[in-house]
Image (cartoon, one colour):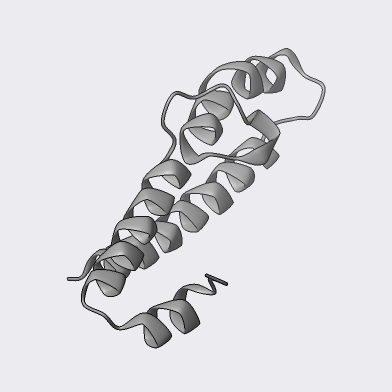
Length: 95
């Protein structure tokens, strides 16, 4: 699997986990102590690790950071292979 394929699959998994987390927190009575604790602890920690914008800046290296690093590596490899036009078109870069 290429780095770009890996990044794409990680992004899909990230979205699925985020959707499941939203479903899970939605099962709890909003405003209850259980909901408040869940949102502050396990929900917040997982969403932070995923790189969720709501919790931005609270994680040293999120799943989103990993996806972006792999995409950057894939772009650099494509540029090294001298597939400039294809790489720029695929990655949407204006270089």
